[in-house]
Image 1 (cartoon, rainbow, N blue to C red):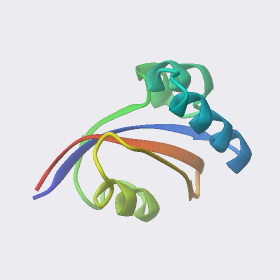
Image 2: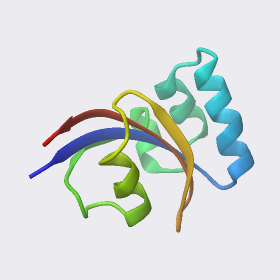
Image 3: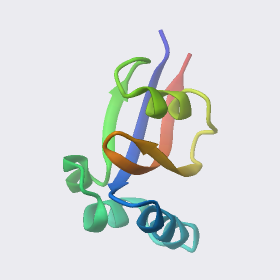
Image 4: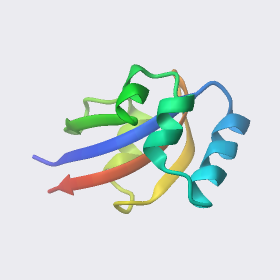
Length: 93
């Protein structure tokens, strides 16, 4: 079964998500941005969600995590919780 490890940043608005993505793309550390801005409890751990399999996250999240390139920051991805920036750090088939 496929497994992935990812980290994310969760915020309330698309605009906030886009602004944080620019910060990361211009050199700010993903984990530091997550600790400062993410509204998810995982923010305390730099946004780390650990390892999980398909179906363990909401559909929009799963679709991105199990199809995107590893190490690329993607988003904004909208879910019922808000807007996410997602980075897959590892994936196995």
